[in-house]
Amino acid sequence: MAETTAARGTHKWNATHLPDLTGRTAVVTGANSGIGFVAAEALARAGAHVVFAVRDLERGGAAAARAGGSTEVRRLDLADLDSVREFGAAWDRPLDLLVNNAGVMMLPELRTAQGFEMQFGTNHLGHFALTNLLLPYITERVVTVASAMHRGGDGRIDFENVNLRGRYSPTRAYAQSKLANLLFTLELQRRLSEAGSPVRALAAHPGYAATNLTSHVANPLARAVMAVSDKVFAQGDTAGALPTLYAATQDLPGAAYVGPDGLGEMRGAPTLVGRSRTASDPEAAKRLWTLSEEMTGVAWGLAGE
Image 1 (cartoon, rainbow, N blue to C red):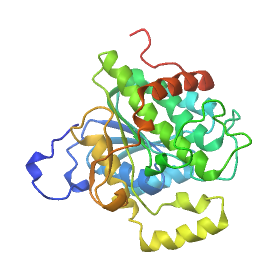
Image 2 (tube, helix red, strand yellow; image 1 turned 180 degrees about the horizontal axis):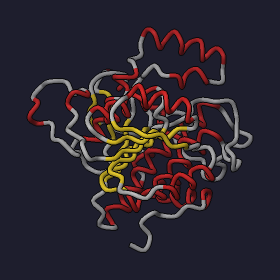
Image 3 (cartoon, helix red, strand yellow; image 1 turned 180 degrees about the vertical axis):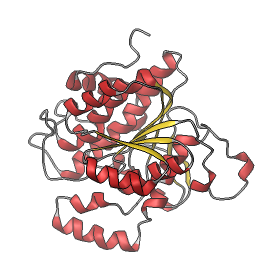
């Protein structure tokens, strides 16, 4: 699947540079809209068989039909670990690429089916469980969509109160969940390397992309400001999906982080980008992994191999 970029000179990378993915299988979570749909559509057009892993099968079916190519739709609710387990138990064939894309953003204080804070539970714990359940089948790579917002909030994981009871704010919770995505990628790659696995774990962020995520922001004023800002400053779904596609198909090192190359990483062509010091902390990554296993009841997917 991997393709090098040296032969393309100074041309900006875009989805037309995707390699031929015929014979590959990909799962994209949250593929019925936004950058998830754009990524799934691009992978299908490049020849991959793409599984749309979505909460709403009707909407997912409509999205898959729009995408064309070889697709199927399977139900997955990342805010319910029973649904995640059902998805994992039903999987029975090699999987080249898992794209952990689905997410929620700056919601009012809500809980998942198992009682976890909704943003941490959906954006991190659901994908943590899904990845480990599918890991015995994954052959090439796992790409997890993070955010430049991982630097926001407290800039750390509140390990003593990860559900943020009594200190919840939509921004703090979102930032914590996105930081968790990067720490998860870091520890996943460490474990894959230690196990001698060829699978690579990478992360990507879309920059400032106008998607339907902002329509669910809890604060009405913030939602209104974002609606205006989306029209003035943001790039669209197509550009926002490029870092994900770049991480999914280019010859990059494990634990690499991809984002836009423009000012403030808000927009532009995909490139390797930096992350916060906390997001690079291997001890925090190990601690988060242990906590995530305890919270989900899902252990390291390659244990015993």
